[in-house]
Length: 217
Image (cartoon, rainbow, N blue to C red; front, top):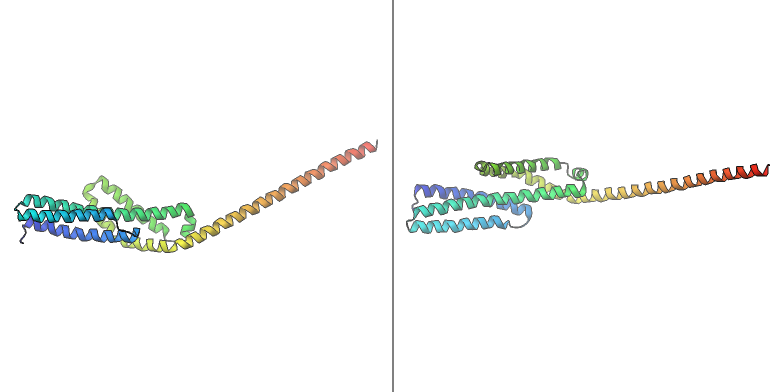
C-alpha cells in the first residue's frame, strides 16, 4: 500500500516512538521486577488505533486515519512517560526508605555512591516536575532522562547488591547502641548505690558524733 506523505511521516514517527516506549518498558520491568501494565495498555491502545487507521485508509477516509494515527503516536508517548515514571518512583522510594530505616550513615558506609544516585534521581524528578508546567518540552525531557538512565540503573543495581551489608551494619550498630545503653544504665545504678552508701555513712557518722557528745555530758 502506497501511503500519502502525511500518513507515511506519521507512521514513521509512531514506529520510532513505539521503539522508545518498548525500551522504557524494559527499563521499568528491570527496576520493578514485573510488567508495567499501564504502559503496556497504552501500547495496546496505540496498536488498536493503528489498525483502525489503516481500515479508514481502505475506506478512503484519510482524515480519520490521520486522527487515529495521531492518537496512536500520543499513546506511545504516554507509554514511555508512564514507564519511566514507574522506574524513577520505584528507585527513589526504595533508596529513601532504606535511608529512613537504616540511617544515612549506614547506607553511605555500605554504598558510598548513594549520594550520586540520589542526586541523579533528584535531577530527574525536578525535570519531570518542570515538564508538567511546560508541556511543550515534556517529551524532550523524558527522552533525555531515558538516554541518561543507564548510569542510574548501574548505581541502583549496586545499591541493591549492598542492601544485605547495610542491614548487617545497621544490626551491628543497633546492638552496639543497646550494649552502650546497658553499660550506661549499669554505671548509673552503680553510681546511685555509691551515693546511697556515702550518704548512709555520713548520716551514721553524724549520729555517732551526736551520741558520743551526749554520752560525754
